Length: 308
Image (cartoon, rainbow, N blue to C red; front, top):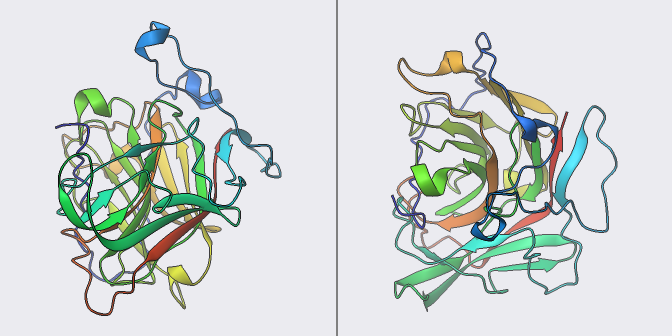
């Protein structure tokens, strides 16, 4: 599967109730990156890791029990682009394996800093990128591939979501072997997904060889209001053989190797890189409708990664 495509689909879950999956842990070592950031080697370094970037001038308050290994507070000048030493982009249209309708760009119109936040804007506009694929919407998809990755730890972001039918915001991760092994062998962790038709419902999911789609996905409902009403903290706490999902201070899902279907492989034992994006349309959320207001923004106050 080409690196410019990733199948990233879920099926809807009945009930939309709190679900916690648990089982006995199987110990799998985190490796050296469990003690700090791990970066991908590049051809020019002959297999040696690149030097990690460990944050902006503004550092957050310590989190008890954790050591900060990487962060971006998005505190640059209004209108500036995301820090290129921390983020790169997926670009283009073509559906991204999910029937999405947008073309992802690196333009400030779709991703910029404003008010101390990263602002990803999904817009309704006719646009043709360098791939030559005409699309009726634009958005942005940022990633840390080649710049930062880590095995185990706490991965969190404070995000205010967009709203409206056909919007599909996500904060997620892929294994760094993705460019070689492809999906789902690389593994995928969806720390936060939401679709506009279900404004109060957060989805936390894992995917890998033998468990794709919605087979290991948890839906968690806010008791009142919508996720787009305010900022929430979406977090993953990753131990060698356990993945815990949080909304603010609530742990709402746990996955271990015991949850996998028979014959499936636990692939969460390597460095993973981060992705932030807002998709428009697709097989899961469906297309925008006449009531969907554009532009829509996903505002990210910060992204922080810790180790024990």
